[in-house]
Image (tube, rainbow, N blue to C red; front, side, top):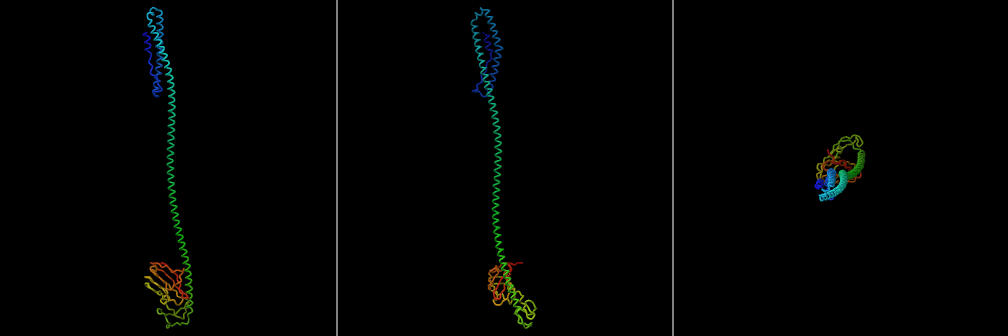
Length: 354
């Protein structure tokens, strides 16, 4: 009986089997490995200790049978031994069953571990894919930012081009207006030039008429007694287009007369000369004798634009309008009287300066 108890007590104590419902993965693996080792140790000890001792007990039983009196003396011990053997067998069966269960659990744990490993691998792959997609998204965001910057630059360039185009259009319009004005000025200049040409032709005709008048004067003998103009002296003439050697030419025909400061009414007297000059200091009316013909006069006015200048002989001006005189400069006006006593005028020079 004591030997049987010793055998039972010598059996290893199995650890608590793993519980997949409550244990974590790591706890499950540790318990499964410990249970597997304990199961192996139980089997090894059962084979090495329990079986030989059980065989020894069987030999003792033979001895008891041989020694029947001793056996009969210890029926209770035999019964207890039988009970112990039965209990040991039941314990061995239970241990075997638990070992089988532990083996199944270990298989399940291994499967769970493989599934967890596969899940971990899949998670790592997903993480790698997510990282790769994050990198791609970052690149896309950078490309979008660059595209936005390029679009902004293009918009700014377009705005600058539009502003430049508007400026060019404004400048072109101003240039066109200037060109139009210059064209109008050129047209006015051409008209004035044509009028000047017409007036010059009129003056030429008047000069030729005066020449013809002079050539028609005959019968005046060279003499110191010939009547002279009040401001001239006589001298023998020299034959030419408008002179003869047999008459006297008063020298006032080539004289210039200074009129000084001009204001009020000023009469251009042909007896004083053919060229007159004066400075306009106030409103002035310029006139000339209305009788006679073939008179050509030049009038030089300074500061004619500072005051009102009225032409008393009402000349016919080149271009149909009286000249616009200037301030601070000189204007040259040519006047001629035709055979019909009509005066003609040409603005020869405007704003003449040194």
